[in-house]
Length: 313
Image (cartoon, rainbow, N blue to C red; front, side, top):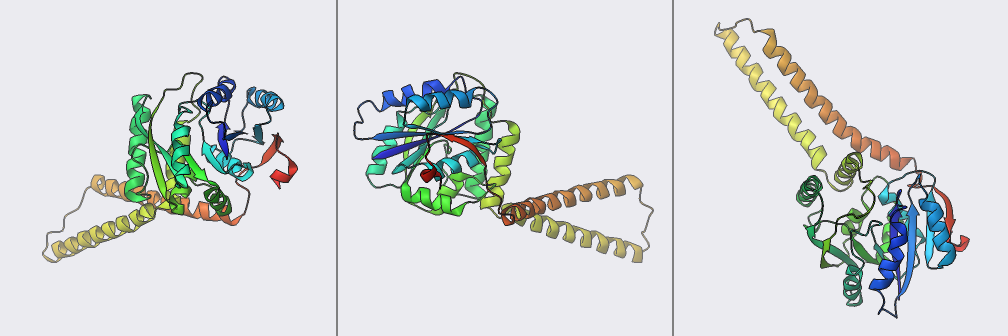
């Protein structure tokens, strides 16, 4: 069997030389498994691509895709899914926080017939702020979008060829690839592992990218934000009608007094903020609908190394 390892990279010149030896060491006794490494350079500005091209020239197992600019890790995964040739494929982080040895356990589950296998973390060797953000994100996703998400998170996944082909055919932009795998509904299995702390370099998973992932995930897989708009509209409509009724009754009973401007301006500012919030939520859905309708590709490939034109077509 052939296993494709899909590795998005962004300014990872300090780590990429360590990936192949680490994986080869883990698969030392797996003589029947052919490995394919599909690196996707997501707009690196350092020597990442030149190092990868040099590695590919020496090792025919290494395929390199270079984007014209940064399109995001999920677009990089989609590109790797599109061009990989394995019977089964797995995402692998370039920083080796996910130990390659967990892939052996996942392959065993695949051989037993599971088309989707998740690596379920039992411990995170990460800063407290990252752990809290991840915990909050996955709790919200389990509650309002994808209840089948593993409680430990979605950092590593192995999927069968039929699942790969399904994800490629969907071809959505501004979405979560892992969310699409869950949404597709194929039977799933889980293996436990401990995620390690990054040893070299700094993470490119910035706060802005995290926020974009949250918005993309909820807009793509949940109607909760748009339902929130409806609920807020109903609540404030009832409050407005109630306040109007009280004002009319007080006027009829002769209790009308001149109200101060402070309470009035506070209410106006508050309601204006709520209205802008609701417009923003609706705009997120409209923007993604517009973006899909333009049929622009989710990524643009600048050049490749080790990939034939037949494979690309």
